[in-house]
Image (cartoon, rainbow, N blue to C red; front, side, top):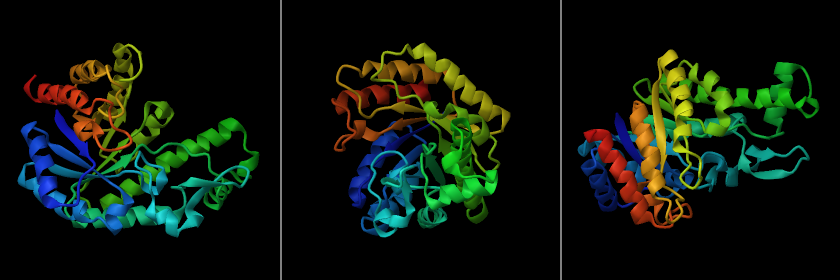
Length: 314
């Protein structure tokens, strides 16, 4: 089982190296770098230095664009949208939304540029982080719906609109993965779909250029029986197996409330027993120092490290 941890990263090489030493000691295979848009513009050290430092320690650098377009994952602070207000989502009532629209061709073009930037600096995989159906009525969305259905999106029935929104998730992952394979065929393409977007799993699993698919069952703050994870994990595993994809799962080590750290071990134990191809932890040291930190990051991180070690030692 491959293991890895997401890092928020730093722009100073010696700090990057120190964090990577910790991951190497845990026997991790991958380091997943949560790269924000600002890292491509002003704080480039994380992207410039980390890939080489990672490889020196036997770690594969994987790029995740955290908060890109104010829509993917957390850390939402989009430099691109500051300069391209036409790429924001639009409400049904015409209102402006702070998140960007990934259907917009200009938005995708910027993601392509960021992928090229990351790969040129040595990243060996690109991870599409939690694309989810939008509720957007921008010109790109309405034009696309009209071209496919021959009608106005504003007049679509709820089930018809929902199907269209799900298809946009698949389209996005398909286009991103195809771009990566065309321009950078050696780069692994990866994606995570949330459990709430389970209806998208099957179609995305059939995307030809996608190599690796998984989900993130982030239940540490809930009282749901961890045994209820198994059907979800097995469904994702079967979809990946049927389509020849590698299968990964995520373990939560962010936003964990104090006293809930035991749930990290309980959930992680289930994931180890189910035996995915990869197990990833979000995020390094309980994401301390961010708005998504665990309430007791040290205790949460110790729990996650226990699972990471067990993944390698049995």
